[in-house]
Length: 252
Image 1 (cartoon, helix red, strand yellow):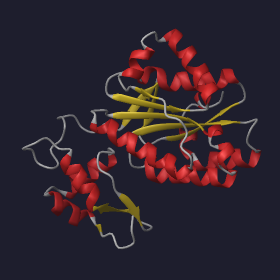
Image 2 (cartoon, rainbow, N blue to C red; image 1 turned 135 degrees about the vertical axis):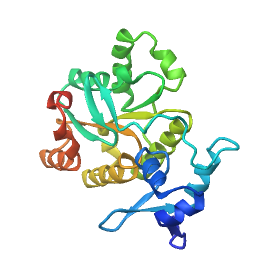
Image 3 (cartoon, helix red, strand yellow; image 1 turned 30 degrees about the vertical axis):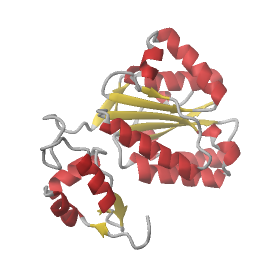
Image 4 (cartoon, rainbow, N blue to C red; image 1 turned 90 degrees about the horizontal axis):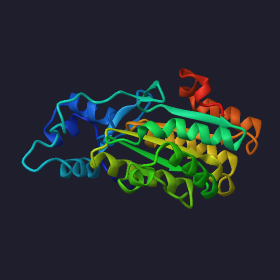
């Protein structure tokens, strides 16, 4: 965003779209409308380009803010029998391939259904191992991938490009009718390209740019053999949501 780009407050944005400020709060909380958070009070600010894109996505002849259904926004999703708040950003630790695979399958398998889009980004070999195990319990896996219910992106060349990819992909999924999103990322794939300090900056950026703006539950996987104890500790500090849920789901 250029320094000269004007940001609208919530009342100005509501007037721009001819809707109520309450509607804007609901849509930003649900991840349907992008916004920035500024100041200590984390007040919403809106870019005109995002508001225009939102208007273009609405049905022809309908109000800019016309809801897609009569259902209220989803606030939670159930993953492997546990109810997670949308926006939850979790840290998963594993010490073996078995632990890695168990975490991913437990997190993604029951999300491969209409209305949910899952993303899994990992080093090529790890991804292949997970898919081979997942296909044994879910023979329709190739159909899920073809239908866009499971997206398998490669790592982008930089942390910033990775965040931009996630943002673009999630917006596209929501425009396509998804109500909830899941993302599992094996951060060891970023390790060779990113110093540990940069990796933690990426995690903090993900929290602000993705986790707080989209209806997504995220699991960031850390190989305890690859990262230092200090890095693991700092990663846990950046994933405070982890401690709100059963620890056996994030320890592999």
